[in-house]
Image 1 (tube, rainbow, N blue to C red):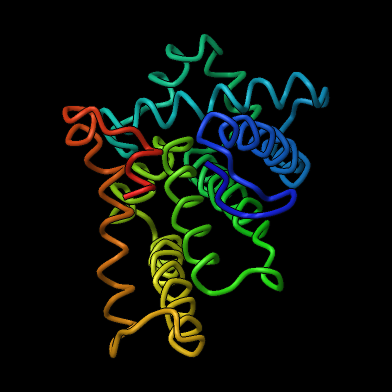
Image 2 (image 1 turned 180 degrees about the horizontal axis):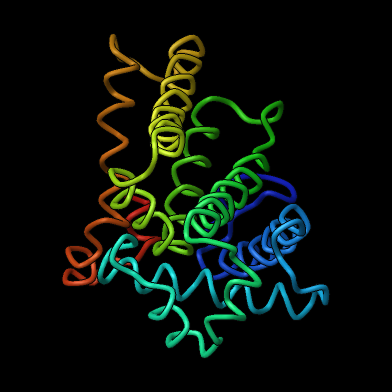
Amino acid sequence: MVNSVGDTAISDYAAFQRRVANYRDQVCRQIYRENQSCIRVKKEEVAVCRMTAIFEKTLEISNRTGFQAMSVRDLSEATGISMGALYSYIESKERLLDMILGLGSSTTRQVLNEMPQDTLGARAKLRWFLRTHLYLTEAMQPWFYFSYMESRHFGKEAREKAIDKELATERLVADYLQEGIAEGEFATDEPELTAAAVKPLLQDWYLKRWKFHRRDISVDHYADF
């Protein structure tokens, strides 16, 4: 299935997954360059590879036991990196949290910014956004789950950023609905409330995956639905 046009066409989840992997690599490299004041490893290729492993294992442990309960020793054992070497990359758990949140936010922003705003009508924009969002949450499910479940433990600034991101999704959907109403494509008196109802449908995919796995529902099937 082709969901949009030009270079931003989404053929299926498998093709999308390859693109997101490239984005993640780029963002990890960007995080390394932005945090060189605290990262004491100077070989970029080595550092980016290690940081990718650190991020993946942090999400794996946190989604099992919670970020607050995870110790640096736990992370050391999971990654095979000594505790002393870990501090060469992350400085502290607070810095690690900032980097992980930045990893997901930057990757998501880069992918969603691909939409060709000037060439699509409201219906096509909404379809593109919903499918892309679902594909993103499938490809980055550990990060989205972590961001949602751990947000109550974040500091005030990080918690406010998490809330802002959730509301931003609703605002985008509401904007596409309002645009579609003006184009005669959609009929709803309450686009903002409709958008608020759509958001949980998106969240269900990464928060309650067991429901869909049990029914043998793929991400492509759910996106079509």
